[in-house]
Each structure stands twice: as C-alpha cells, then as structure tokens.
Length: 73
Image (tube, rainbow, N blue to C red; front, side):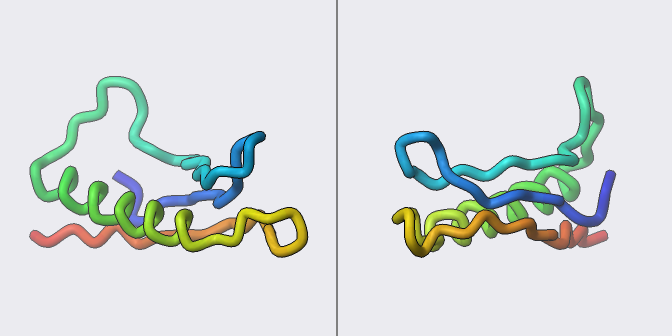
C-alpha cells in the first residue's frame, strides 16, 4: 500500500467541497486492519481540509495535497 495519499482539493459544479483521490488501492485491494485504519485516518484528514476550503468564486483555489498514511505496526 502507498504511504502517501495524493489528493486534489476542488469543488463540485454547484460549489460544494470535493476531493479527487488519485492513488487509492485498486479493485479487490487486500488490506490489513492497520492499513484500513490508516487509510481511514488519512481520508478523515482530507475531508476536514476539504470542508475548510473557501468555495466562493473569488477565494477558491484548487490544491494538490499529499497526506501521510501512518500505519502502526
């Protein structure tokens, strides 16, 4: 599994927060419980930052971000 989650923070056509995740595990991914928890934690961080972005036309800026996937062994 990747150790970083690559995300583009953007917005929908009706100006709501949207994140495009570029490197999720593929179809039929095999993940340990620790990997699932780490992925979930990274996705929560993405959701929090995504919701904090200004959505109005003047202040909105699409952003590319990398989030660490911290797997506790």
